[in-house]
Amino acid sequence: MKVKQIATFSVIALCLIYITGKSLFMYIQKQKDYNRMLINSSALHAQVNYYADALGRETAKVRTMEFTVNELSKVLPEVTQALKELKIKPSRVQSYSQSSVEQSKVITQILRDTVLIINNIQAPAKSFTYNDSWYQVTGLIRDNSQTLHITSVDTIIQVVSRGERAKPWLWFFSKRKLIQTIQSRNPSNKIVYSRYIKIKE
Image (cartoon, rainbow, N blue to C red):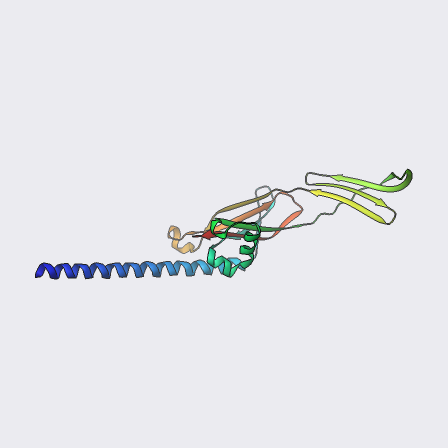
């Protein structure tokens, strides 16, 4: 009889331990998800931070976000739509990055007299050309019209790394925040917006 009682109590104890462990695990997971969504909300509305790199070039920095596929479709449906337009299934995506660059440059160049031959008739005009490491511009002014052909190139570097700790007072017990660093090598360009999303399974 005692053996049966011990076996019954053991089974009940194991069930209670399992239920308690499962409940504790679910609570911890829910708390992690809640904290993650708080960080996402903060990152979603945060401004881009700027700093100069070792060579004085302007560099932008933003917090990263982490969503499940279902969360992504609810919070940022435009991202899901963009993936559909690219014919990529959201469930197969590991991360999504989007940046917006503003370009501004003033070019001053001397005009040269030029003669165009149109239907065997000479037509006076003015032209100019401009070249540097980032731009190639050719311009033609004739009568009341002006034609410009502009080619510009740029290299955009994006790095995701662990930044400062979320809770510095907890020292190494606190995880580091994921930061996306973006740099446009063309000095006439400015990063005005950037978003990096990690897709969580």
